[in-house]
Image (cartoon, rainbow, N blue to C red; front, top):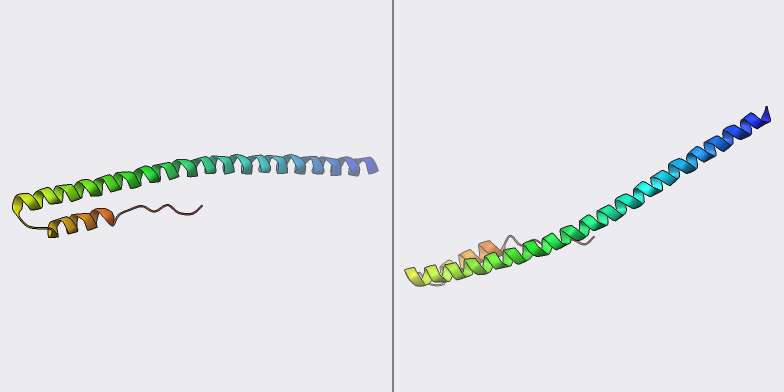
Amino acid sequence: MAWIVVLSWLGVILFAVVVLGFCGYEVHWKLSRLNSDVERLAVLGRQLNKLQNDFATTADRAAEIQATAHGTGAQSTIVHSTVAHSTAVTPTAG
């Protein structure tokens, strides 16, 4: 009868090892996937910042051209530049 208890405990221990091994695998897999996602998002964030800077530069040029064409002065340039630069994306620490 004692062998039934021993086999039961061995079965429970084996089951626990399998479950913990699977959990460890899942955590490792998800961690590596999240790290790769963070890297891709960082690249996209840098690209977005570059595009926003390009947009701000274009808006400044357009405002200068419009100010020159209409003779309104530098006030138009300041308004366009402020709007374009106020939406910059800043990366977060991870």
